[in-house]
Length: 486
Image 1 (cartoon, rainbow, N blue to C red):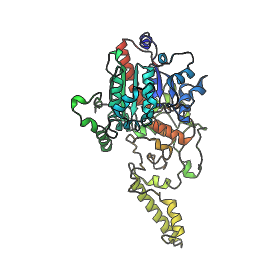
Image 2: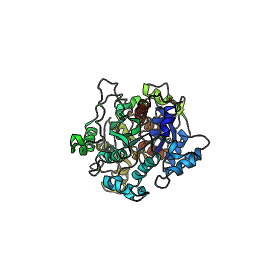
Image 3: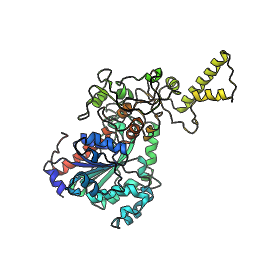
Image 4: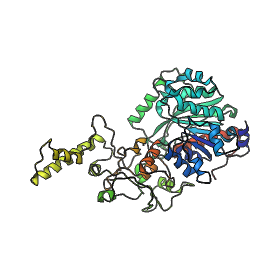
């Protein structure tokens, strides 16, 4: 294989990131010493963010172009970005996290049937995106690949999607392993469970391994139960039929404790303008740099300010929050760990106090009247407590936070700041910190698109550890030391 010869002679491994988003996986692999060759991402804001951070040079507009993997073949993408080069020779590693929902309805037998057709990856819309990912692998024949997905990829409608993909790859002479990793065990201040599959070309003669945890933390019952549900399909199989699955790495309790919310964001400047009516509705743009209030207060904060290539030594420009005037007083009353039922109870208490205050002033508001309903809306959120118990959550200062999700692009109630005096949801930069994006990493668009990009991303610190494991497998196989990041 020509690309193995290039790597053996000291070449830097070149990565193509599919379903790249803003670049969480890319950033981690770059930190592990890989060159980020190109990305395929159809969301315009995320595609532009990826280009801003990894390809700010002469061909920026081409790299920032949104690309639909179902419409652009690998030769087309790489031919446009690197004219005159042979696509298969360019790409050493493919990484990405294709959506799995549609593919779950295809299944192993149907997948193999589709692939017998010369352009079979186009034929079944039920598995369109996953099949296109696999088509890129089939066409570019990478030395290694990494696939990231939700834990339910192990048990989606009775399908073990990860094993079906592994079977397909092993038919093409790849050695595959997959498992579940939680970001909190790799220095990320967030409990985020994900499935990772690593495959290496059979010519390498090695078995891929997963990174050893760097931080200790006992996952809450909810996360443990979710892992059990995801692995239920595996439990139904005989041990000899577990296929390419390996048990999640053991976490040594003697490791350093998990990074906390305070360690992650406690050094960022306080935000209180909203409590003084100095912000209003409208898009939040990242045009004003806010200076740091002082030196970094933790090793994690120092890393976020000094990540190589993404240093931010003086301040940040995306420390902006949502305008939620009804809820500031509720946030201030909530205790760390409180969820929506507690928030709702606080809102009712505040409302009744307002009614009583008006009565003392001689204004008697009858229940059901228009003034009563108007006052109710000013104090009480409209969500049903029985249907949305987890909709709100106040972070706990001395613990890592819950999973950040793409829903951040719509609201941020799942991550309310632990500081009562600030009485707000987290800022864009705080969300980025909790996802382990360094302060010098820039997000295209305004506040809502940035929140969505962050929530969709793979935490770069976790990606770095996974990338280092892939690098070690290649180095072991070739007996060489690959170049470090320049």
